[in-house]
Image (cartoon, rainbow, N blue to C red; front, side, top):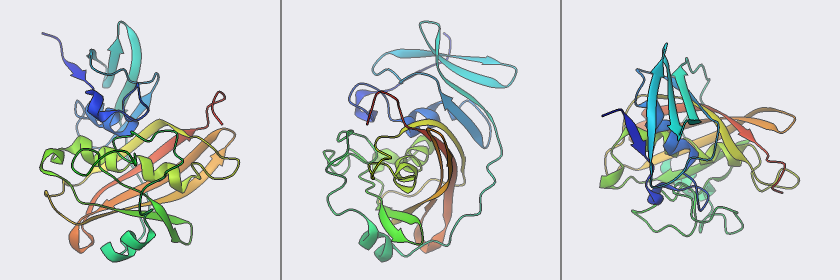
Length: 229
């Protein structure tokens, strides 16, 4: 049987497609070490995607169409010092982003309950940073959930939902996973801007466990769609 992945509806970002970070993490699992995954199409839900390998590149295909493409990549980032859990909790949006166009997002959706979604509600920390807390559930003990946690805070660092920036969708995510947090561990996620070019916005994110232990870091390319405001 060929390799395949299935994105369960639970792991959606927009209502009808997979969360970008989670999807990238599933693809990255077929590579060793740090990886960069580019999303070519909205990841479909609840159906198998064929995974093919070609000269070190991994592609997830939906009826022959490339949904995501991954390859090994170094992630060179200067990460900020980890804020305390209390500092991150004070920065986070208390009820999530109630104006988000993706209220059911597995990572940042305000409509997702604790233990179901990750409920990572990044808010301004100061000095251009955003931060949020995350306490993983038992079901979140895998590297793809670290990739997911490193996803949405980057959009908020890039100005998601703010002023003229409007909606952003993930186009590419390069990440290094150094460890997987324990269930119930008091984690902190930080995001910061890395510049912009036209409709593309760049951001970095980092995930820390208790004691400031670095669990993962990522560099993302976000895109402002022409069809969304």
